Length: 490
Image 1 (cartoon, rainbow, N blue to C red):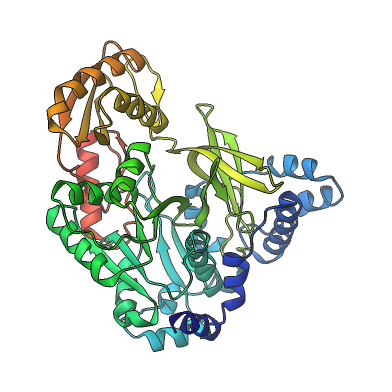
Image 2 (image 1 turned 45 degrees about the vertical axis):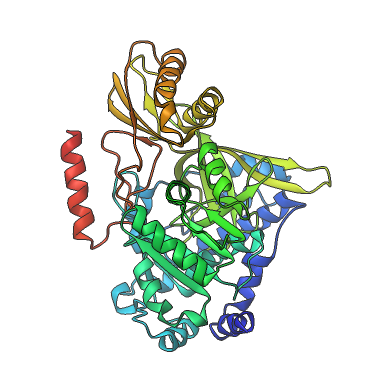
């Protein structure tokens, strides 16, 4: 029933074909020639119709019309890449010419718990939906999405869930922090949840009572898919075990994204959700999801995005992403500031995959030792893996705080409190051996990581780290938090 209703709603809104193109279609052979054709169409469109990009690609398109694919992509990589600051400065000039002079506030789509009115406007398409990124500097990039833009992004999330085995109409539960990613608007729409199969369970913090309430919801609603961030999932599993909560329903599918997913977190979650398939995804607020877990890494959706890397100031490979088919607010060679490796892989069956094989997160996401070396999340992931082999696999979470360039505070959550001193001893040995002999290390054992979940959770937290999930536009509480953090960092 709900599957049929979903198809009717997507057809009524005029986006069923877009759903098929983004969600259902895949590219597992002849990937690069198809991406090239998409890039040419994108550049031709914005070269003609976009005030910001108008005329920028005329010479490139002329010079590369007849070259072979390797030459085309090599030359494409020489085009200028653009930062968030570039887009923020350009504002609506980056939009298609039809939307540049439009007052976006007069076109905002408000749900207000009226799904039939919302569906009418979704079908009509006369709106600009605001969205703001968080940003490592706390400064958001505000994007006003058209109908095509909004559904293109939304369907990239559907593509992750579709890959896992979920289908529209099957039940899904979303466990998200309040006041992030326009979640409040979605909850308003979801008052008529029977229309969507979505159920939201929102939280401010994670403690025993919050997890008890979530377990009750899981047992009663029985979703096929649970959508959650990695660190909250880890804390859910930890709390269920610690208090022996009666988890009678294991969602068949659990999709995590938005944070680094450490091996210890995965093992802990899988030890509690024993009948669930847990998979990781990668994306961003401004681009949607662009990759999903596969053997060998995270597979880039080759019908959605083209991903390159170029060295940043420290020589690290920084991702540069072009969002294919998005012409009303195009992201062309957009610098994500995320450090990663990107490669093409071919499996034994001859299927080709476009894969992100290693993601470190933002290029600021490192700890610098007192001798000037940088240690990214992969170092601490491997550190915990090695440490766990020495301490009976008791560690389920690590959090590292930079106190200054000569001191680190390392917090652990462990299963067996009797192993605290063993963990402390072995951790200090490894840190002094692998990171620095002369730094001071404060080892603490906690039951919960004290974190403001409106902010992005990072296993590594440097002094002054500020990145809000979903931006800070019009949010006085977030703005005041930014001021507090900046004052502490001075």
